[in-house]
Amino acid sequence: MIDILGLQISIIDIVGAAIGLVYIVSEYKANRWFWPSCLLMSLFYIVIDFMAGYYANGSICIYNFLMSVYGILVWRGIVQSRTKEERPFGSCPVGQVPWLIIAVVVLSAVFWWLLRLLGESNYPLLDGISSALSIVGMWMLAQKWWQQWFCWMLVEPVMVALFWMSGNYASAVLYIVYEVFCILGIVSWYRKYKQNE
Image (cartoon, rainbow, N blue to C red; front, side, top):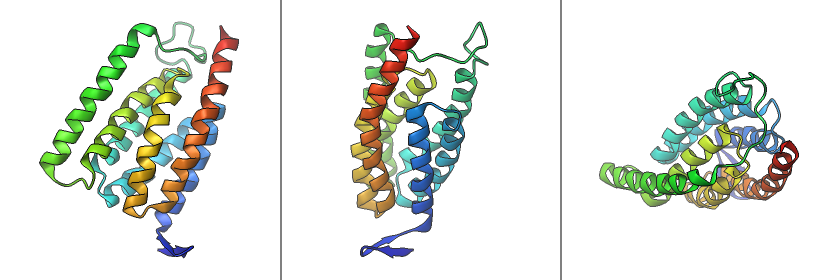
């Protein structure tokens, strides 16, 4: 632990936040370093979340790690591609939106119920909601849909609250930065999607 402005911050929290900055900038730019930084960030946040008692979010980081491998394969055209070319920016089909909303609601309820039942999570409702949104957002991200940023826009304030309450201040600040990148990402990815059309 080190003291910054009177706050006790762990080294792993600082390193995780630094990797997270590389992750969000590379996601915004959609460059080749995005998925490797996502893999590395997922590993760090598995540890950070479990240490903070956010078991659903820690489990989601395991899911994010696996989805990063899948995302690499999809974006590079190895899977879900007839031409085997890099996947262009896309848009979520309108018919899928209700299913994604239902998935968030059902997953939030299931996580909240499980976390309350287990009694281990410090904030089971917030932990459950952020985890459900992360699952859907990560799946949309792997599809390279520009609307994936909206899921993250909803997740980030919840994560700021969770990390601040657990004393992971570097991560809380990181998620404030993420919120700004969500707005920038919506504009940037939408423009790229329209150019691909």
